[in-house]
Image (cartoon, rainbow over all chains, first blue to last red):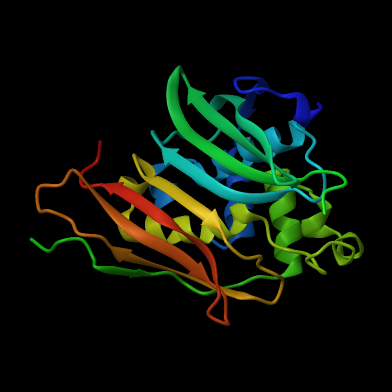
Length: 132
Length: 133
């Protein structure tokens, strides 16, 4: 996918996503989060959902190695149980170039059973080729 | 009834290269800037850097610890990634309550992550509902 040609509203991903209990445990171990609350309440860590969704969107737009994640917005709307099937979509918010840097925003929406679960927006700065 | 805490303090997280590889596997973000030392050496960073979403997870863990299901059900984060975090860095999160009227339906904290040298690596705000939605 050529990210430079993507206009506002362009769909980047539109796919199903599942976070198993095992995947959630691997995520919690990786981030060093030993909070017992997730198991006690049988909820998938929403940061795990957000991380997987953001990574999928960033892979889809094939960001170059020089791209920098500069900002992040997240809203945890509704917790869900492990192994719930999510629908994950991402669209381009902004895509513009100023002073040799491209500023791209990706808007993420994750739903389960038609209800919003996690909403977010990633801001990414990408040096333009040939820019000083 | 006690009001919300005026300040928050998270646990210190010692970031390691092994952790970056673990996080890459867990999240699916295998950008070589995070996991390939040879590649990262040729970038302006000079060495690998942590995924922004990994460091943000430290911040979210602090909020989960303090607010539990209220954070997981209606919590909002808005942050800027201000400086890279490298393997070997020790990252600590904190938060400071903004003015919160007693009848406010949500409370907002200025939140940040800092490295061992006192450099702010993340700054932003977190908003938490006063009651479970």
